[in-house]
Image (cartoon, rainbow, N blue to C red; front, side):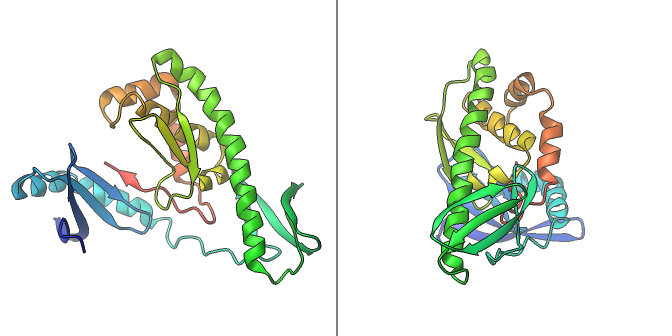
Length: 249
């Protein structure tokens, strides 16, 4: 384990909460609760031991609430086997996988079925590759369309135009950098459109406010007045292959 990383426990009433502390050159404390029910605290190296303890203890009620909320969605969905009949989700709707022998070709959506043709139906690696490629292609089209839509709204409030990157993210739906790059998880394309739009608008607002300050939420509310309802829908949507996003404080 890195010397700057230590395993600790937090006492909250009768509850003992284990967490992992990461010390680094950062400006403020950040706490993350992951879908795997892990708690991680990221603290500035300049913090004293007393400051760290006080900061983590002050977040104890929030940490406990997030763990309880995450627990409701356990166990996480089991991995796909990539065989006919399995359910896959796209834009909040469920589709059945239909695998057929034939010449290799890209996966395609017909009605309520996702069709995949491969030379050998037993070749699950080949099936998975085509399904993954289909999801990535759909994500690229979908995210770009809604990013353009909501940036047009945010631009009126001084939000700069971002660069978009799509990749697999284990614990988050999206992130952004101060350099103006927004990264979205390819799994987000499985969520309902309202949830996708919320994540995009959330990250766009971070391009102007790189924190979760009052000013950030004021901007988010001006750009998307119903963001809280959208977030609740996203948080309660169980997605195969896509565990819930980590919560941050």
